[in-house]
Image 1 (cartoon, one colour):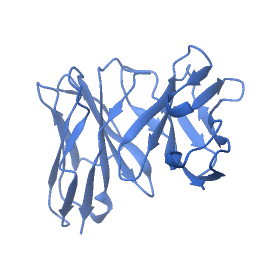
Image 2: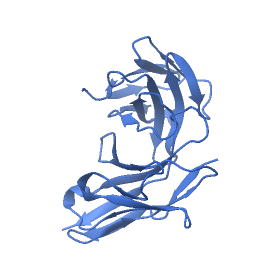
Image 3: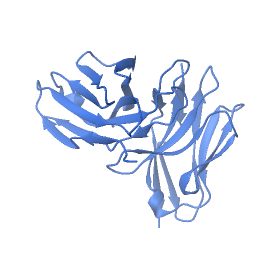
Image 4: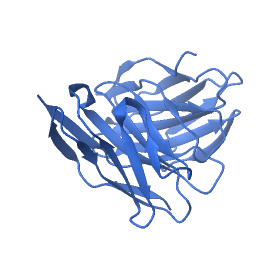
Length: 115
Length: 114
């Protein structure tokens, strides 16, 4: 069975400083991994996804993530935080095997950006 | 293309009642999945429908059910509501290609059970 663990429930950074949100995964298969963001009272928006192509994945709004099989990690980074980045971030793995779109979510990391 | 739409956006019910939530997927998408989001349990998968058939189901009691229509619109129903059913219910749509496919989420329906 697949699972994801987000190592920090809350991360606080100052505007203009780097962001690092950590995620470890567990999967017996080659995983499909995603990062989604949820702003208050909004639905989920896809930031980026990894599906066994390049290990460094670039997403929207300057975010990127690196897939490291040896460390079973898929950490999300951004060089410079903006106030608008304050939100809840979810690391997600696609259930495998099977012909299904089921997603398995981590518990989420709340990103606070201080002025 | 229009995004995933969910109706209603907010709902207040009392214990014992039943509720029906609706989800309209992105045009051309044939798969609709439902998720429950609560502060304590996070985001949990309820079920997925593809071409009017339930393709996968999460670990929820039988009070939670769903269906999909020929136009891919989906409804979920919760009968005999309990206080613990208060949550944000999100639906997601995709083409239905399975593992690794991007799911596009709607804004959710916030259900409050009193």
